[in-house]
Length: 412
Image 1 (cartoon, rainbow, N blue to C red):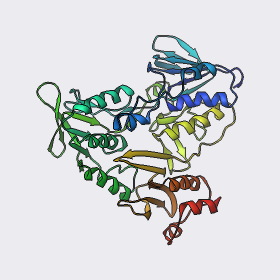
Image 2 (image 1 turned 30 degrees about the horizontal axis):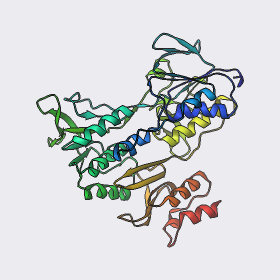
Image 3 (image 1 turned 135 degrees about the horizontal axis):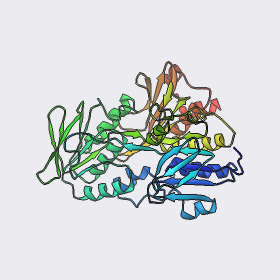
Image 4 (image 1 turned 60 degrees about the vertical axis):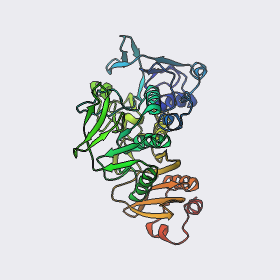
């Protein structure tokens, strides 16, 4: 594609889409850039929704960029206009209103949808998921007058909301089919620490408990959650945090390859070389995971956006950025570098029960993940180590006096 004249259409104006538009200009693209999104709002920051905005009653999330950002960079922002269809033969995106926009390259940054509770009573008032600022507004308002909260799902979003309810002294129960908090992403040691944090603040955590149905209070509002064990958990506010499903309908209807998301190669190209996918909707071959993976993280979205800009402009390079994540719960910030694996061995630095600590995870003797609480220097060192060629062995990490910061400095 001619970098000076090609038109690039980006569908999705979240972190990935906005960063892709900016990166294209930064990398020298001079042609048209069209950014399309079904939401009417100026694109805004998503992480604060479950953190500062609900948990701390903070201000509304800030825009990702100010209004002048788009005009100054000649980015055509089409808000409130959903993409309905991709015509690959003509290289056009058709909007719901019928307008067609031609493209030389198309970037799908369409994100993911909250997994819906498909059970009896799921349409009762008082049952809420969290994907948009409007969801967060409803959550915050309902929480102010809630008498009893049930959270379905002990992942990041569910436990961040549970923390907000605990802050307000609202009796809170969290149920999850898994065996422990944040089981999919955390080591047992760190999972246990955060479980204790919540129970020490009055929350009840119930594991090995699935969702059977919701019961009405007799006035079309939720009155209780019934688990698969038959146990009834009274509630006048229920937050559903069952994870997300990648938004693949647009790509699937266009005949693109789907594999736990829109399947892309290491340069983030889909099965159509003119179409790319990034962020929560894309699965890719990772340098930090054995096989294809799809990640739901702002870091992944923004780093992939920078890579895709270079790929579109003919400067192909594999996407190899180290994944990292964070959550704030019960006043503690957990930072994770790398991706935890179910079978990993661990080495603990510090005190995992209450104090500053990091849990190092090893798979086949190789460091793959570091979880840190109250240890930002460990987190930054871990990201440097995982991005480099030299990693500590489990024996080195187990030696008395081992320091991630010192190892990262020595490894260069």
